[in-house]
Length: 334
Image (cartoon, rainbow, N blue to C red; front, side):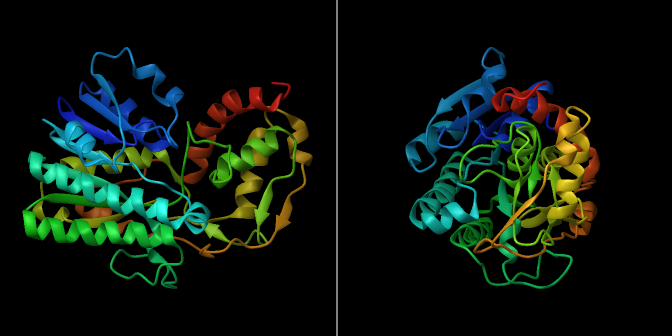
């Protein structure tokens, strides 16, 4: 078990970085996949390769619209809910929109799935839910107080899922993602994730900006581990494994200084000048958690989750994609 085949699946936020990686795998496995996206952060190029696939359906719609959610879930056996407005800084700058999408949109999806009788809904939760908890590694049942509006929205989603599972007999599984990276991750814009942002700076031979002194650490997680976790959560049959949340991570910690070192090393194979690029340090970012490290024992035990890509493996695979797609934009001598 643990592989989705011959199913009708809805992926919300399917034009996003994680959603499009999930869709790619599902289409390879003979599923009929519907993508619901409003392209506010998702990109058309992420799904352009799927448009002519006979098993792919695109619905351009918004999870904040209940009718559009109802249309999207019709006849689906599984919903993989990835749609959200990510980013702690974005939520600090605009908490209302983050709440509307992440809480209101999620509630719409729950109601639509409930009314349509969808068997299983797996949703993207977040490591930000651990907030100010100093417990290391992070275990699912020990959380602190949220440190940002984004973290609040993702925690509220977990609370809604718990209540809906009990009131309406639904099968809901939350996956707390830890710093996911990989192909199709956007390096541009104010809210770009740290790895593609660092990579695009280095490719342009510009100094990457590290917030703080570089000692902050993260459990960076390659996107293929996340795809695996979504499939396992969608297909697991043990009743003890549903209606709960899981960490999706590698269970290893990398500091920002170590990360930049890895990236310089890998990218200098394409352009030796990158090895000499200096690192710039700036102030710490508001709402940032200093250290993040996940325990993945619960997922291993109940889902059979086994992160097949450690950080180094994922970076090696991702770096080719980053170089191919970002060096053109940087005008680098590739």
